[in-house]
Figure 1 (cartoon, helix red, strand yellow):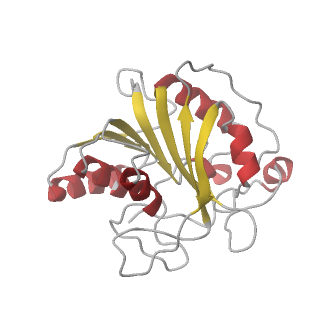
Figure 2: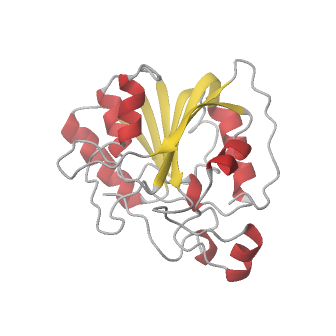
Figure 3: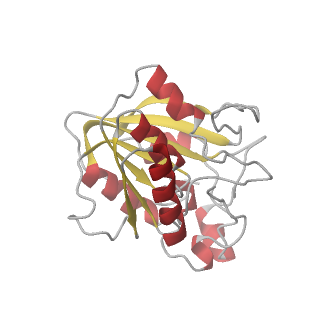
Length: 240
């Protein structure tokens, strides 16, 4: 399954900080389970089958889940191993997912054209260095359709949270992403203030026997783009 690494990350050599979805954290094994929040959005009618993009998709547990529920899914990850695993999972599930191996910020428009009505990020954003937030917002501005949704999970600040709580300045001084950046609800709302908040909460803890993946040290957020998107981006300073 996808892995969140405690050390290294973007500041230690990966300039874009993209990794796969969260797997094997503190002994937790999500196997091929989709995120509980993604299943909840579908059950509640907050999202419906549409054209979807998975950012930092890892071996594609969420991509395969969406495809099995009628979504047309493109999924991108830097790791050739993860992409190969994702293709195997899709074949085993009998669904079609278009997996792309590469840097989501550098793929040509012909490969990642959009528009997508749903963008799913389960562990990519919190592995980005602060200055990459502008590139992330610019990518969303290009590929997310008016009225489309961003489904995001990220490390949470505070008790029972996970990830680095260093300021942006201290992060660059330390030159170590420390496995990923932890965010507060207000910082996520500020970064994504051009989008409308539909829901922002802690991920629900799921028992081992559950068919869904859920750990309480992550935020889950669903944002919606307005019918007329502005394309504005915010400066990237001290938002962690």
